[in-house]
Amino acid sequence: MTTNYAVVAEGLRKRYPGRGGTTALDDFHLHAPEGTVHGLLGPNGAGKTTAVRVLSTLLRFDAGRAEVAGADVAREPAAVRERIGLTGQYAAVDELLSGRQNLVLFGRLHHLGARAARKRADELLERFDLAGAAGKSAAAYSGGMRRRLDLAASLIRRPRVLFLDEPTTGLDPRSRNQVWDAVRDLVAEGTTVLLTTQYLEEADQLAGRISVVDAGRVVAEGTPEELKAAIGSDRLEVVVRDADRLADAAAVVLRVVGAAPDVDEDHRRLRVPVTDRVDSLTSTVRAMQDAGIVVADVGVHRPTLDEAFLHLTGHTAAQAEKEAAR
Image 1 (cartoon, one colour):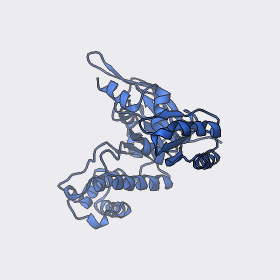
Image 2 (cartoon, one colour):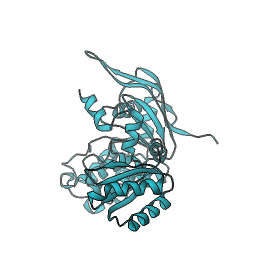
Image 3 (cartoon, rainbow, N blue to C red):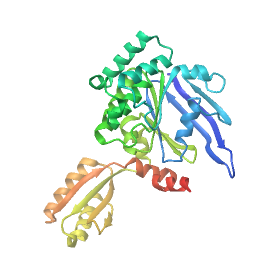
Image 4 (cartoon, rainbow, N blue to C red):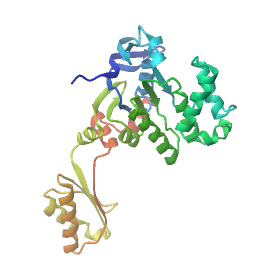
């Protein structure tokens, strides 16, 4: 089966001029299938926003090839712009206007007639649960409402590809979930979404595939589960109530699982890789009870994307961000 890609980047390079220069993209490769969410995961300074700006024709690149929605980014920038939507890191709404006025304005800027712009604005207000606040000034909107309004504005022309550059930065959990739901609805209708994020949970929740970006290049790609599996198996974690029984508990885990656990004395915690989630958990709990060891907490945890980032790049996302800021 031939895969149709909505976004293609091959060997992209972008260097910002100036003293010393900064290479923002270095042999950057990306293939995002149609009708999916493809995540670009990495810390600030990794090159995610530069990639979005290049692919959305806002920034020229120095080398390589890029294609979006079937149009060549370098040779056909106007065609690319007609087929995409873009939501940046900060909501680009006019706070002096109401929600409806903002969307009508965007509609007219996209060359819709007055009646068509009003109709499209009302459709989007309803879709993003903003109809009740349509007449209110955007200045009175919550952060989540502004982001949803901004997202609605990017959909005025029903884009084939939507670029979302860290769309939930600064939002509370409820507002973040609302944006996530809106993104899932768009993809269900066939829109391709290229999502940049430094939130590991966000990439895990939304993206079908993730490209891990570090120092301007993609260092790994796969599904969230594939990336987490790259650092190994699931982990059994046991927290005992009594620190004096920690050594006894470690012996129990060794006997049940067949591997010596890592011991965290400060937190009275044991960790050990396991291959059979259910059997390892139930057998360990039963053995602890038989040994008279009181367990404060126990569970089997899958590797996190943060751990995958550390494994794939040799440093954590936080460490990479500090390096980029220097």
